[in-house]
Image 1 (cartoon, rainbow, N blue to C red):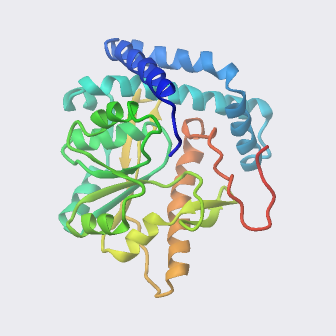
Image 2 (cartoon, rainbow, N blue to C red):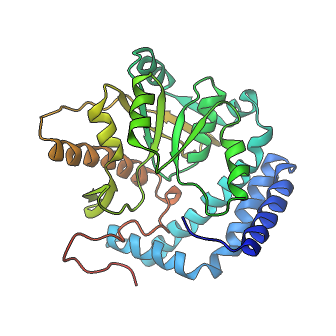
Length: 306
């Protein structure tokens, strides 16, 4: 976790507090349009992030035109702007108001897995409204624990934490002992994990993501192999036709334990990552292309980013 000076911490906190206070009391449509408008203003000045997004798309879709790549990166910024607007509304959201903007599909898959009493692992990526997915599930009667990286700013962190846990969710620091996570699953709890960010060894394995080796967390695979918990993908993309978020809970993934733990972890991690890739292909302008997903390289491979 990075270190912030007291002045930087206080200035960042004041700016975020004022911005969220203003956004919170705007009507939702205005909060969304303001968030997207802010993203449009930031976009021309976010040169490093834009270059990262375009570099990622150049590797992943070499046949794509530069204009289309720029459209997708711009869409990524707009999606983040939408999320800012949506997040600002969550302190006042109710289950009824959420049902007006979220179509939940596959909730029966989660309910069936929870009834088994063996614990449930939900995984997702930074696509669509990932914050809204856990918030809405809790509001709809299915609170969960999910792993987070605490914010560097110790004053902003409580603001975010208060929203995330409003309907009974629990956040767990990513550096928590694995024993605590295993215990939660063995107690029948539901645990959420984000799996699509660059990860550093030794907690990573290289698997294919869009045909390029990507260092990917092994945490989810390790938990799945050490418990009897079902593993379900959960994503919340914005559906432009419905004008709603589609909170989709897929059926549990099937997997076998061969006894070769290293290979089982690699194979499972690849399976999970392929699910993320399929969603990104369906909603390319809603994924976090501005993240340096392929920064960590296998030994001997050159750097990808400048």
